[in-house]
Figure 1 (cartoon, one colour):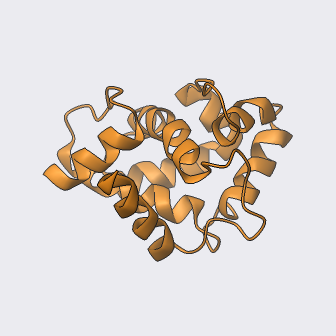
Figure 2 (figure 1 turned 45 degrees about the horizontal axis):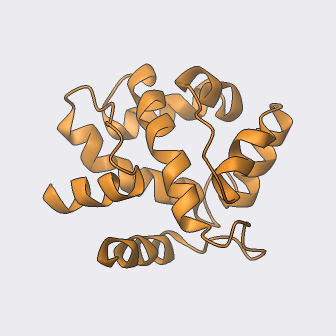
Length: 144
């Protein structure tokens, strides 16, 4: 699991992961997040996710992740408000952890990941691509 730890460490800028000791959950996190941000994902890709944040009154939070400058933090509870408890429950099931752990893990990873995937400070008009495209971009980030 060293490569996954390296990818997540690079994306999170060395922030502590809230995996709760669930190694299986951590191993499953990257594919779940890339699926979430991919154009064909359940959340509607980055554009759909940004719209959900706007609807929840937290557009400034995700805007800070996309834009240049410091990333605003988000809590697991706030993520649950944005995505809905059903979506968090689905993610938790895929990760093999409970919903609060899944929310905590996502709240630690999403800001840095979205920041790294939008280096120009704006969301690409065509989205971030499919899950395979995102994994390729993450591989390139690892090489830096």
